[in-house]
Image (cartoon, rainbow, N blue to C red):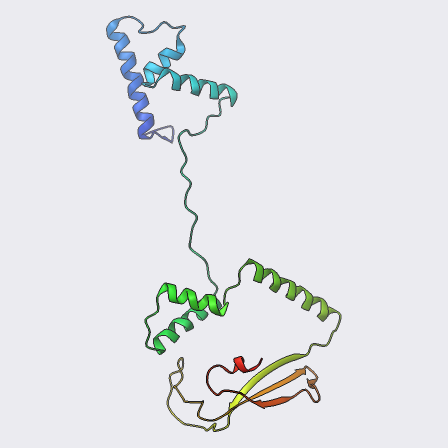
Length: 216
């Protein structure tokens, strides 16, 4: 139902019905139910609302120059919990889930959250602030033509051997690589090459676990 393109909702239709009924009651009584100078009472009775409500609406109409807003309590909508992720982040999460299945474990949301938090894959506000600071400093140093020296490490097994086997493109074959001693190789270099006398090779104290723990 609409009037000149305006949709009349159920609340408005009820008000129209109440006003129509009020007018018919006066017509049947052949008299005014309330005198004309009691406009507020006539409006309250005609719209079937309390006199207090009618008076409050009238006062608000005067204070806002006729621009009335919707009344009633406005419930606060819950914030959207959906997060738009980049392809890289989605790939990281997918790889973690694949690790669970590779270890014959069923991933759950709580377990996935624990792994992500432990690996510090997604940065919080403080970490992001430091990262932005680092990028700004790097940009400043590059503009100043500063020389950057990078340090990296790797490891090799003393019994390292080459094996041929078919493997899936996404998940490699499980190969026992801790049968011998771990040798850790550390070096520093820049775009000009390795830094002279900066190489270091030493035997790890244990061949079990991640070699990063031996770097200390």
